[in-house]
Image 1: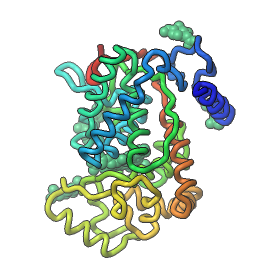
Image 2: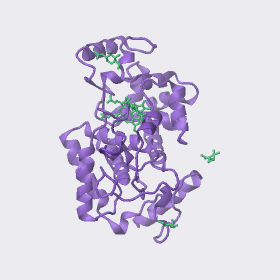
Image 3: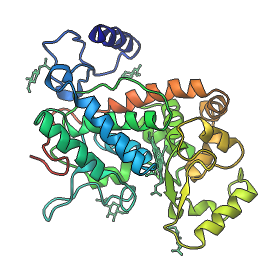
Length: 330
Ligand code: HEM
Ligand SMILES: *[C@@H]1O[C@H](CO)[C@@H](O)[C@H](O)[C@H]1NC(C)=O
Ligand SMILES: *[C@@H]1O[C@H](CO)[C@@H](O)[C@H](O)[C@H]1NC(C)=O
Ligand SMILES: *[C@@H]1O[C@H](CO)[C@@H](O)[C@H](O)[C@H]1NC(C)=O
Ligand SMILES: *[C@@H]1O[C@H](CO)[C@@H](O)[C@H](O)[C@H]1NC(C)=O
């Protein structure tokens, strides 16, 4: 029954997304997940308990540290934006290999790698070399949203883990918090994602924290749309150190809701790249208004955009495997 429902959903998804590289097969056989072909039932027989194992580790990690939900959600984004969702972000540097962890957007900022390790070692005990680290990141991102009070969705799986990583691509493709709207839109378009996806996915900043160094250009008060009291509180917070952390959503910092957009309306977006969306041309500004008004619309669009981001695939022919440790190729 579950399979049938999943397939009905899959067919609908395919009908409305002609470019999606998803395996059309719903009932077993065929489609082995290569070349970024994703589906829902890949682990149904090979590792039926996978999602349960993952959820329980994420639940424990978030119970210990509320911010971990945000950090884990961000890992999937920083993975997918660099040559597709292939767990390239998880590879450690070695004396002969440079990974992505020291790229500008990641260094001293990404966290949650130990949680992924914990999940992976449980999965390797239950079903050795079956569930890819890239799929773990996608499932963990969904679970983090759910555990923060956000919507749920079915995660397509069947990704392979990369054999390589690219620090220069990470530097180039992950948007900077100082980007203007045109640059933000372009960085998403370069990957086949839309301006609408960019606005909806930016709503992930309804949870988590940022370092003062990520929004120091806002502290001078330039650029319009700044709430004076909010600015003063940030100036005070950051006068201590550039490494101090501020909530991305000051009102409901650990709840996945549409408060992020409401904050933008009152000039209380934290990152410059958040606040600029309010006056973004065309649909960018109007989507901010719409999501601030309508939490369910935000949830629906966020889910769809997460699925689209999760389909970003590595270049054809780049090869892949299921890693036994997410930190190193086999
Ligand atoms: C639109 C372009 C985006 C920019 C410029 C951006 C930039 C940033 C920056 C600078 C930080 C703070 C890093 C630090 O100071 O250590 C951050 C945090 C975060 N980002 Fe984004 N981001 C963007 C999109 C996204 C997307 C698409 C997602 C996920 C779907 C996401 C999820 C998060 C989360 C959850 C955090 C908090 C992480 C934590 O507390 O550990 N961001 N982002
Ligand atoms: C599908 O891909 C083609 C070529 O890459 C592009 O021109 C077209 O706009 C895409 N269609 C959708 C619905 O994304
Ligand atoms: C399955 O993978 C093999 C190589 O790993 C490939 O040759 C074959 O075409 C794939 N089959 C399907 C249906 O994707
Ligand atoms: C990427 O950015 C980091 C930090 O800004 C810099 O040190 C490094 O040289 C860059 N690496 C590449 C390969 O572009
Ligand atoms: C804080 O970071 C900003 C931007 O990276 C930099 O210009 C400034 O000098 C830093 N301030 C301190 C006290 O380190």
